[in-house]
Length: 164
Image (cartoon, rainbow, N blue to C red; front, side, top):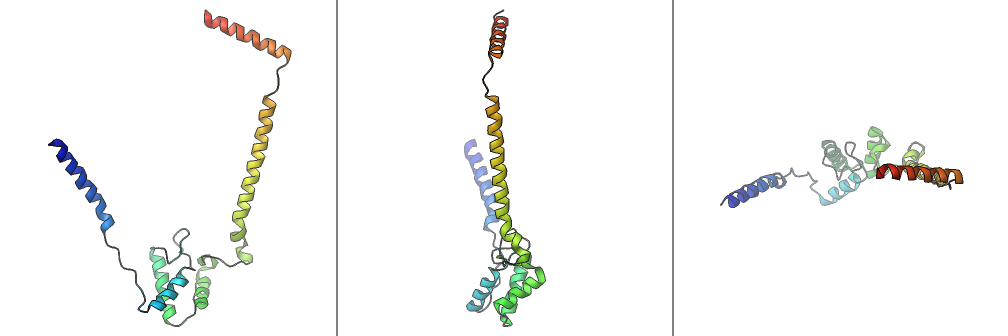
């Protein structure tokens, strides 16, 4: 009987822990026209969420991303083109707002930086491996006859101490 009551308590606790997963989220606002919403989503896929790490405003649930997407929706309703909207966002927030920044002098580091870091990392790794190989090869030197005799003598005295 105790087993049944403890199992029912565990079952109830599991159900209570699942409750937040069942909570309804606020509906994402959409344009009345499906074509208009498709255009908004295409533009939102080109703009980076300024709060989140590596997400577009289409993917993000951050308040700023929702506000930016609503602003894009309003601008599309006003008849602005995709280029005009993206240019407006770039003027306001800089090239960082573009999810795929253009290749120009101010963004070269964004494009080339990861490859430079990879090259530096591989170079450091190779140099460290070579250094380690040299150190281990130096340590593997053969003992001279005097050193070998001395080692044998030390081992014999150590064995005699352990026997006593």
